[in-house]
Amino acid sequence: MVGPWVHQYPHTAVPALRIAFLTEMMKSWWDRWLKGTPNGAEDWPNYRVWMLDSAPPDASAPERPGRWLAETLPSRRVTERVLALGADGTLGGAGAPDRLIRTPQTLGAAAGEFFPMGLNAEMPGDQREDDAYSVCFDLTCPDGLALLGAARLDLTLTSDQPFGLIVARLNDVAPDGASVRIAHGMLNLHHRCDPPAPLTPGQTITVTLTLDQMAYRLAPGHRLRLALSNSYWPFVWPSPGPVALRLTSGALTLPVHAGQAPGWEFAPPEPLPPPRLRTLSPARETRERIIDAISGFERLRLTSDSGETENPDHGLRTRATMTEEWSIHPDDPLSAACAIRWTQAFTRGDWSVTTEVEATQTCDANTIRLQARLVAHIKDAREPPETIERNFVANVARKHV
Image (cartoon, rainbow, N blue to C red):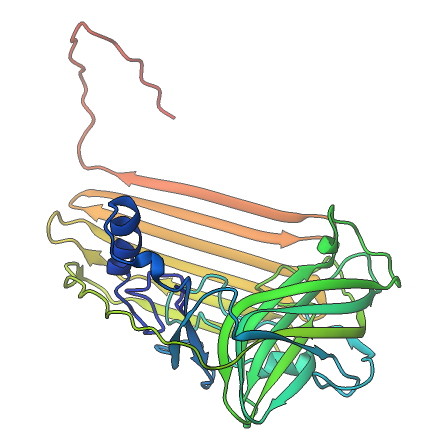
């Protein structure tokens, strides 16, 4: 079962395609395979997937249009379509490209989170700014295009450095220019072989990159775009120096779906119990992208405050706050830096525990530097005993750390 959910369970996650996940698990696994109940679960299709339809970009989408498909993999409705990267910037075009991939270190601002958890602009946003800095190849889809599976990209490249990254995004471009990320993939070019090895500057290499799985249907009149870059901050930590990759040939292999397949219908999610926690202060989230017009530095700053809540059963109050800052200069990969501070507080009456975590990551040409600090504060109104009763069983020496 594959849906477009963030990193949550399918009965509570967004976008809102919530299903009876707990009932589904009970029927398809616990009842059938642990209890031996003959409920026919073994006859269900082995791949039930939500195929997304074209929609405007929204990094906080509460729902996504589409439909459930019931497929059996490998699907007879999927065929491979190979499209050369044309000299004119089209997918399937004639001639070999001769394009230089040398993107700013700040490319990736619309990437979203590695593990999105909710609706705080954590999903990928409009890709058109990142597209503008990328090397792009487009395919016009007058009748639309359905895709199911993982695209494969074969590239012939040379690098001017012994290291480098290649990042590929497949995007759905609407007639108004809005660009929605469908799938993406990335490769540290050291890992083009096993064991990993540095590149020889100027030497031609051929690499294969497999993108993420996708189930997506482009609307008629939209374009499918392949966008190539060699940076994707802060999703990927940058190379240890500026890199220029020259692309001399390539081909994209697409898993094209026939567009027609049996549907599937899940039961709606089980009703959740009403929230029992009492809210003492509201939650608040911010996500700011800040560009210094003087220095050129770009910062992504995130703040999160869970708000304070109280459990009425035993009076425990909890609150968590977090700040993240990711900064980099568009011309300097060694300026990459990340700083995170996370505080959690638990109180009940006169007792309280607070933990503070501070972590930073920076780099130079040869190393990535990590620093972390954890401090726990404990307050207890109860006085420690001044006497210890002899029980004639054991005397335990206490060591205060």
